[in-house]
Image (cartoon, rainbow, N blue to C red; front, side, top):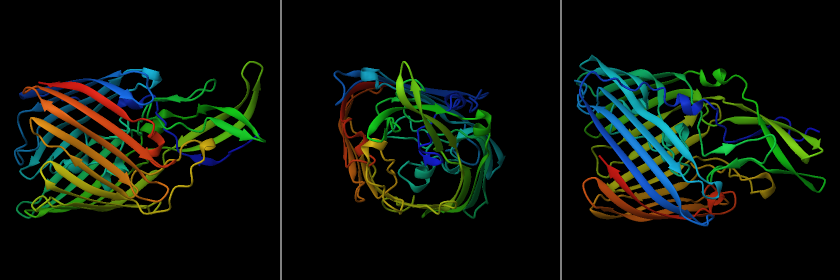
Length: 438
């Protein structure tokens, strides 16, 4: 019996080689002097759904060349960065991530340009101070590393490129190329054709049961990836042109890449087994349609509050994404992110959680003072009807010494059924830990 032939659904799909290939950005074997830094965070965290505290270990490391390219003292000859975390398995909710990013070898083309090889975001090559946040219109369409579900990082491509400046005019151009495509690898999610689908705390599970003629049957999943090489060996490229002055940096850009998240076509049939009984076997075939984005970005680096505006449109779907942000104080950021379009359908518990969009009428703010004893605050709120929800993280950190920081935080998630944060509203948590840097 066919029950959903041809239906397209979004699932968190992780090819087995994605994590391994994330480390293929060449680690620089620097012939010049290097600077090493590292950090270890050890914390205990307690989620509302857990019976006890669970451990979390974070490890970061970096190797930086102490020599910069001749034309810009902020752009280093080489760098390597590692980000990772390991969570305890309280109530089978633990997770882990190992990610290599911002890793590159660079060289001068002239006094006004350079090239690079490695894994970096092309738009940060012109000015390393220019961060791409997931709350910007660019980041909302680019995010690839979602292992930390609530704080995804905008990851670069594995490849290379060129950044050129036209002397004394402020004009610049950037070309970024990558032969390797890495899909988003999200929170741990395990599919099985014999058992229920399982995942970590923040994994978005697909439908687990199918209702037919008043009866409910468990659903099992088989993922048909086809050739993994066909998925990974897809080219990506970016073209950007702009102008930088004392008033800021304006950039027009275009990039083409497969969708970070798969579109999944599913077919299913009822199976009867003497041991397991009746269940629904679902065959899921993921595809990664190519998306082409173009848009504009302005960073007011020389203006009060450093305003930032971004407008991005995807040509295939005509989806528009807008964002704005300001920094009225060095430790305070405020912003807005929106992708106009139809609202999500009403939630149906029988069909699993609704994939509400993060980039939908979102207001956010972050307070991060760098005092010896500092409060910290991060809040995000969706305002669209039927998708309303919020996230609030508050805490304190104490700089005990030059290398040691002690921190406490509490996080609250709330929202309507089917909203982005509402899918995780039972995962309020508290955390206490320490970080040592060298």
